[in-house]
View (cartoon, rainbow, N blue to C red):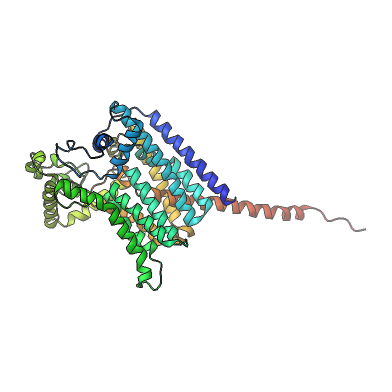
Length: 446
């Protein structure tokens, strides 16, 4: 097939994936935003009206708990669709449709990465697998920030890879930095991207020359500049330095505590500090303590807990890895999926789909194409996984940034199988005429 045909096939898959996601949204029961989605909806309504976060949503005080990337996009969509004052079910439906569009674009971005690394056939296979990969469908159509962060992170990686093959290297390095900054503004753990992105654009020789160090330095600088306006906003509104969000303390405190350690069903699983005995004094005064000050206090207590029990870090990492691979039981999968409004049926389908793709990914990891890809590509999912397994992990949402790489590896296994089948068919086709000649009697001599 020509390159134009591969691109046409990929575009068709993206369109079909959008249709599949919209169909899923329409087929699932109407839901209302809960937990994180409730905050996103509240901030988005305020942004649609005033251009700023809600001043009352977080205990009627200024807040930087939620990163701004997704709420501002959702708020813009609310304003464009004029649903700010609509019924909550209507707003949630609009948010789900936004997620469907983001999910379809993610399918295309997975295909683009595969094309950059391995060519048209793998790109089409990867896009087709991503289109039907259940966890990407269910999380992508939830009113959550993970889908947007994953899309922007993949775009940053694609820009960095393009830097390695383009004559306009500076523009791609700068674009990768901008996208990385936007990813951080959507999910702060996307900061781990800066290492592999920096390695991707560090291609000059000699390595320590000014010309070689320029692109990675510029990439990081642009990422920092992209985040800076929000950091300045936080300094003005919260009267303290908060780079992006005040979530770290809550994540640490909710995991590193004795209640979490003693949980017989889900050891070392995160819970709100409202349900942690060691934080009862702070939980009772949440509305009276400035948000940044509260984050600092709970973070310091969590760090003290880790100092007293250093092995807890390894224990948390172990149990969260178990949960990442969906080995904590189907009931756990239902419960964590329900926190982002994924019904039980699709949640369980997502578990089995993940297991199937994970097996294919293991096979794909041993292919020649996987070994030929730059190691920095595989560093991305490793760092994303590490950024959550030592804090808090609920599937499928906190695995979302890793999912595209599971799909890419699975695509390598499927592509290898397709090529083996084609090769076997060619061998059979070549052998058949020889066999026919052997069975044809020689003409009689006169």
